[in-house]
Amino acid sequence: PVCDLFSQAVKAFRSNVLTDRIQLKACLLALISEYIKLACPNGITVQATDSRIDRILRYINSNLDKPLSVAKLAEVFHLHPAHFIRYFKQKTGQPPAKYIQQQRLETALQMLESTDMYISDIAEKAGFCDESQFSRQFKKYYAYSPRNFRNLFLSHP
Image (cartoon, rainbow, N blue to C red; front, side, top):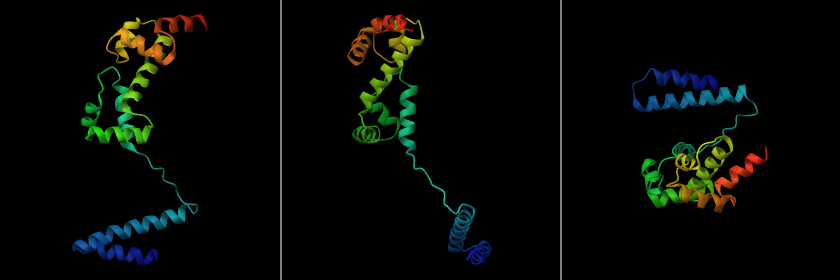
């Protein structure tokens, strides 16, 4: 069969007819497939990825310090806001607003642990409107105020 495929490919290559050009591509793909079968008798597995959700998550994580709304994210990724919310929840298991808030809080937590930045600066860098909103959300999520968390973290190395 490989010799026949090769002969068909050569014949199609020499022709300028559109259907022969398509046949050439089909033959080349079939030849590649045969080669892979011979080279890898156990086969090659292909892992499916969803690059759109990967791009969305990267965008969110690199823009946490900026205002991120569902409308803005949907616009950036060319989706209707309602579809964006459904898609995001289907892929991550949570709505976008909750994911964004969680990422901002985790970013702030890391900064509290690893820097001596003012809490107001941490709030700003993590994307919160102001320090009081940040403190309320942080305490709700971690059960400690940012200041108390930092003091507790510093006292337990």
